[in-house]
Image 1 (tube, helix red, strand yellow):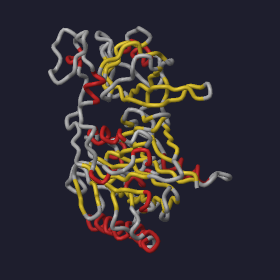
Image 2 (cartoon, helix red, strand yellow):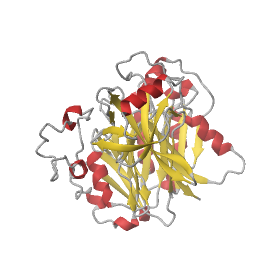
Image 3 (cartoon, one colour):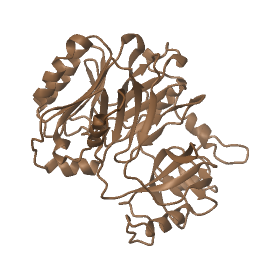
Image 4 (tube, helix red, strand yellow):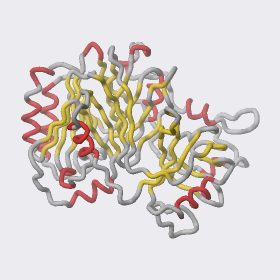
Length: 430
């Protein structure tokens, strides 16, 4: 639980700086987690002022530049914002990671799945001649290596780990699997080449980095609960069982052709117009989600972007290292093209509801690069005074976030939440 948590949004960076200055006396020296969101139109002096003001609160801090929080107020996409959470030093450990991940994204990999091809010599092969993908993926990164500040921490004492990274977090997420009782949430930093000249902008105390990761490990008597939401998603198929999967490919659902099932579902869904009979249009935002039982109801658990599908091959390629295992209950979803999430508005409405108990909520949000580009030319209007969301840490990125929640006896395999408007986070009761 944080000693302080808030998100402040304003058209004027000077107003945010004035707000931050009032926090110094109470939060000085405490480990600080923060994000700063500005647009490419923000003056460099204003960005420098925001960074300096946050650093003046505490000399022990980690942060990154993030994207605008999705809002129905289009001009707010060009406002500046700062989210910060301050923790007791007895229960927080900051770290910087240089553990390498996968630099080149893996796509399709149709060729790698043919059984008549010889597997890569680095990929383990079992006695039947099949590629042992689980072993290959678990050994792809040196899971025994941890950032130095974390090496002496007791795995049982850590309940949550929060970090900001570049677009190759696989090495770190694999290393953090040591903390099996902890929920790990990582925000991939916003792309900042037109703001700072760096691909990503990560901050640790007085240092600035373009790659790697920075983060914080937390332990406290009050264990947070995890939450997730995917507003606007529409189910386009019934729940089905994965009957064959390999690598990042789903080869069969209920012993049927997955691409064929998906094409049939799209043709019969009003939110999608399928013009091509040859395959799935790349313009459609399609996802496969895993389901779990909760009080007799199916609940969406994990969500994977569908990168490609071919009816002649049958398989569907997912944006993940490891597709849902055989026996997993899944369903396919579509995000309508007209969907425009209003995360900021929903949060404000929820916090203004009468009778709602006080909680602290830290939430990472996936946004869309299309929304960011569309709003870059909008006219900046003054929609009112500065907004301060107390007990809320809200940060967004068009590059998504990495999720590994604690479960009974362990934690789930890391997966990427990249659906626009998708939210994952932690909640502490106060």
